[in-house]
Amino acid sequence: MTKGCLTLALGLVLGAAWPASAQMAALSGNAVVKAPRAVRAGANSAAALLHKRVDKVDWVETTFEEVIDWLHDEGMDKVNIVPRWGPLGVEGIGRETPVTLRLNSTTVGEVLNETLGQLSESEEVTYRGIGNTLRISTKQDFGRKMELKIYDVTDILFQVPNFGRDAPIIDLQQASRSGGGGGGGGGGGQGVFSGSSSGTQQQGSGEQAKRILDAKLKELRELIEAAIAPESWTTGGGRGTINAFNQSLVVFNTIEVHEKIAGLFTYGE
Image (cartoon, rainbow, N blue to C red; front, side):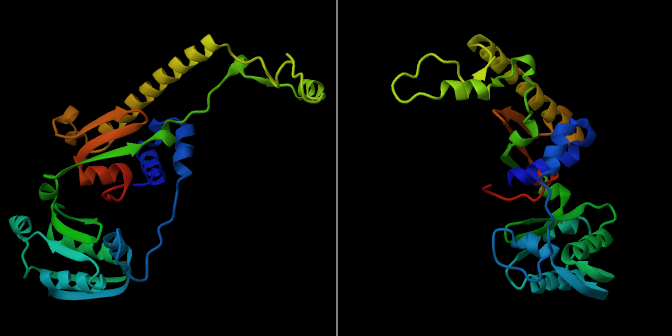
């Protein structure tokens, strides 16, 4: 997951709960995802399949297995479609379960959403597209596997310091007067910057900056735990954890929660 995507996703999730300056930094990472005309084999080919445009779907009593075959065809055999028949069977969904659906000018993802919504009124059935594999199963099945990922939140935490009266003053006239002479003497003329803080003051401001950073990381962690699947974290009785390290968050939770935090889940990023 790129830093820009994480910044945008967290900025949108946290909304007004986060300072306006951080929201503006988050929105600066905005990007428009264009639906591909064809699916290419690659690290995110499952995502490309879900965004692929579909002109028309007109199914009447089409079996779910035929829907799976349609997904294979739309992915041009570059995406592995893996229905987990065991967990799906618990929800009463089998190969011969009928699907009736009519959609125009849509996407593969929207077709799949409507299909699964029709098959499971409880919305327990879902899918996960990671790399070149699209899996279809239940939320409970997906929730059994936990993933560890580290997110760099530097952009969200960044704050321009307010130096106040301790800000250095740039004296260009002094620089021009002391810069005239040739080599040799450089002397003890005053530098271009004046009025800067002493070493002790700088050390104090550094310690203060660390306290502010720690407080922001704590606030960000608590906001995520409260806003995104609260029951999934240890604070809410679940197994998920989130810890701060330097200017990063170390998150251990399900893929579904990771995607709510930072968008499309990928391995090795």
